[in-house]
Length: 172
Image (cartoon, rainbow, N blue to C red; front, side):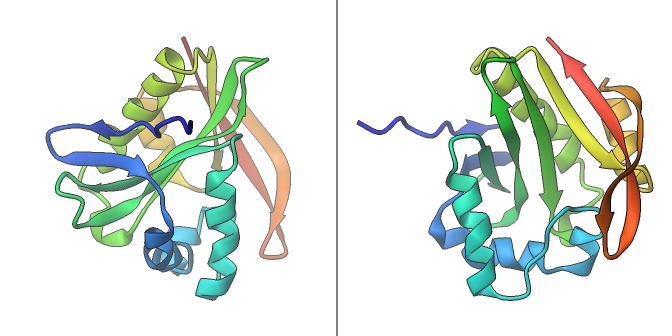
């Protein structure tokens, strides 16, 4: 018997399992230059976006579609990846379509995700790797009481340029 994917609701947001029906919305987000500016991946076709759909279904990940409460409007996606039960840690991530930026969704959704990780997965440490230039995300992480543990210089190459990332951590 398959385990039911958890559904999380607030008075205005629904977090539900990402399904094949979300392919076009995932593509819409992960092909948008504004969304992928600080995001590690991007896709230039629906066919290539299927790679991301396979990644979402991997047991090391637990990502939700972020939607309106009535499930009619897709806002973005967020979740935990690289879940390591042995070491009780995971990485948190989230992206939103630009139409929904500045509406408090990130501030509302991130606690739902990390609280799920702490309470249901019994994680002790949740990490967020934020590109150093992504000032809005860094501000949001600080507002949510994530601790900045420092910067990893030249962490990876993106668009043929070395980028640094700041590590934000919340522990239970």
